[in-house]
Length: 136
Image (cartoon, rainbow, N blue to C red; front, top):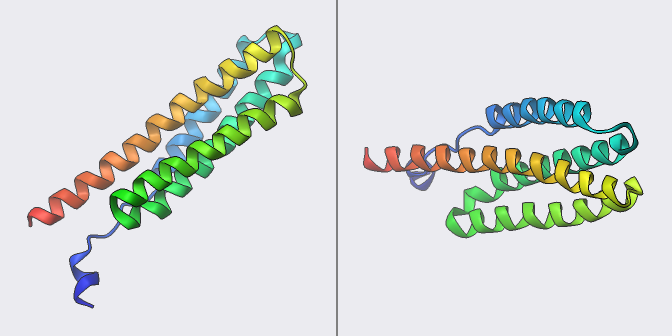
């Protein structure tokens, strides 16, 4: 019981998940609107792979952060490995070649950067809450 009272409550991941989803929708819409017609399928697959990878990564962080610094590293590692698998699987599934494959990669990594920023914000805000409660 005492240990549970000393451990600060973990910040909810829900607002960060909503922010990541909203940014993904906006980013994917912009990328699809800017893509040439012959590369729309590749861009869509890149966006879907990035969105799925971002969701897995944020969930992995939320679960793993309960274990402190080693959990944080494990959470980021799990998210990275999920994205490695998804970037390859999505490219193969899209059948993209040439310019379309480059646009697939561009859409994936553009949305990856956005979701990574949300993950970092989640970790940052979670750690600030723990530091504040530790001082009290």
